[in-house]
Figure 1 (cartoon, rainbow, N blue to C red):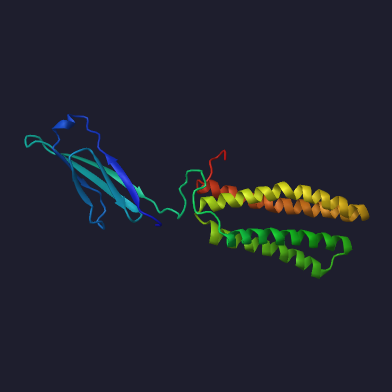
Figure 2: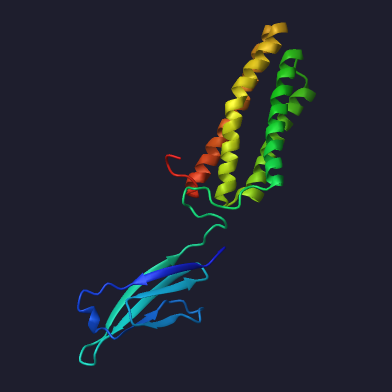
Length: 227
């Protein structure tokens, strides 16, 4: 489950609440030694250690001339992801140095794939260069998957740090691609166009990565719909 969940209860009594002598609680948690509780007021709290559906009941004990009043409710405790609070503020432990290295490696290999693809287009395609370009993007994807499974799962702060890193990449790639196109195109217009094309491919690749991360962040409630 990741952590326990404390639930507060309150009984709203329409009749004269001052006539109630005590409240006898049953939290439906048979595995807990504190499953039952007696209070003199209409408030109680119980900590659930495991996910599940619990039937909570409380009996209001009144003077002998009146029958006891029984109230009931159903409580559903869902498993929670470690480090996720779902408040949109990016709570969690954040990323370690090794996690940042995985993201940087993903960026480096994607750039390598785009550069090698440009070289292959300019010099004439060879299976070695094409294979190297494909492997570059595949390794980039592999490092992204490793980053997600070992650094992000349920950690809102790490996920949001990754999103911001990708946003930075998307801001830099068009500028770097334009500079590369001009420099390469100075000697060969065709190569300059190829450099611009594969810069666009690189930008689209990271754009898709950001779309996936945004969807995950909203699913885990790490960001709001506007955030």
